[in-house]
Image (tube, rainbow, N blue to C red; front, side, top):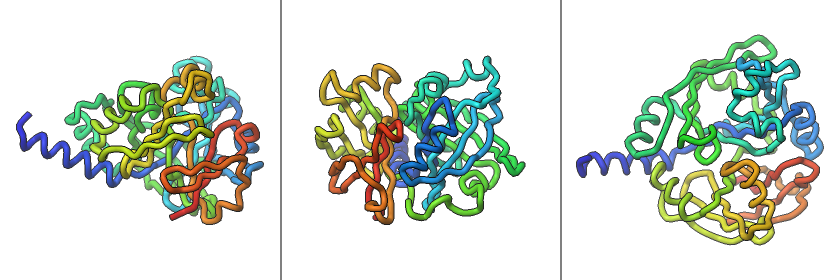
Length: 296
């Protein structure tokens, strides 16, 4: 590769990192209604989004004003056994993993695929997918997996809408809630923090990370420039994070939302991450880890 070509790739990576936006984050479990009820208990309402066209899963969502949303994904009551077994997130669904994956939205998925390939990152060709909303509206989109592992775990997968995006994000024509502004951080559990930082830098060209330790969360943390991701390596072999890595491998272990009034949500514990206070909701009640910080 020529010096000019290398310069172009690096510049494109930096531009991509600066413009990166979360499309949605996925919480997986075996029982969708139970997941909806647990979120309602902590003050977050959801809307049923309908079954996916894969004959295996169904979803509900909480959409936010910034265009991001939480996707609760469960197993269809009449799921096809073969389709379920073949699903990339079958283990996460059957074992109710909670945080499972995340996606970044793009207006040109083919161009982003080319950019990642040029940066030396493994990425799949765009694939068509979709679902029908309960009101009969058909939704269509394309996705691409990044990194060669399980979809949306270590790296986010890519998504580009073919039908108007608002139809997918806002099934009722508006955000489900305005109290929460959006998903601000995806916390990705990793085995080796420095190695994970190198891989993210290769893909997105972000500047050197800011690091800190959170003994309450039990992790060494790294914030990657403008990317909405925090990498988390376990502090010790006996932590909950180590157990999660052993069960599900590297991937999302928690999500953080930005709220207009964080005090409206009862925090079971609090952390201070990179200058911002994060209130953690009751993980036992919810079944997974969800943080709330003040909207900026």
